[in-house]
Length: 179
Image 1 (cartoon, rainbow, N blue to C red):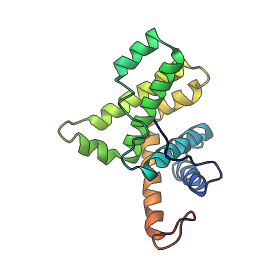
Image 2 (image 1 turned 120 degrees about the horizontal axis):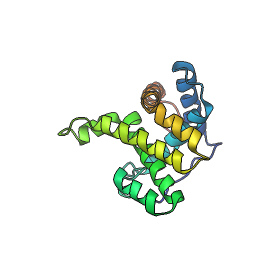
Image 3 (image 1 turned 135 degrees about the vertical axis):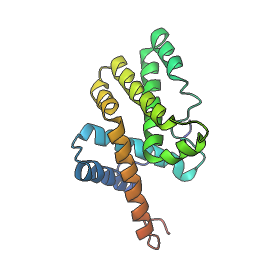
């Protein structure tokens, strides 16, 4: 997947998203887990960096993720590094969509009920397996799996905060870009 641009740590948008995520999770939700907050900040930044210049782009494309069953087959037969990355990306995609854009999941699949729940269960399992395959990622992956619903709720809170900030600052220059 080709990236339109990257947000370095010094980029104002990167700092704003990180600060908003830290505030939401640590202050409003009381989740004082820096590893999770750092991971979720990076997740949002990857999503924003892709969507900003190309709204049709999916930062976590499903076409190359496959189903959970296909990923488990890869894990058994192939490289654990490839499988770990695939499971992590599946967890990321499901957490991003259920957290930041739950209405798109519901709207896209209005004829089927339970898609948010299924995406949550699949995301939790994907993070769990990613942690089992790569011990270096295990602590964060297992905590993401265990707190998936809280993380999704927090991401919805972050989205609400940035929408409020956006509405408040509609007529101002933000991040050095004319409004």
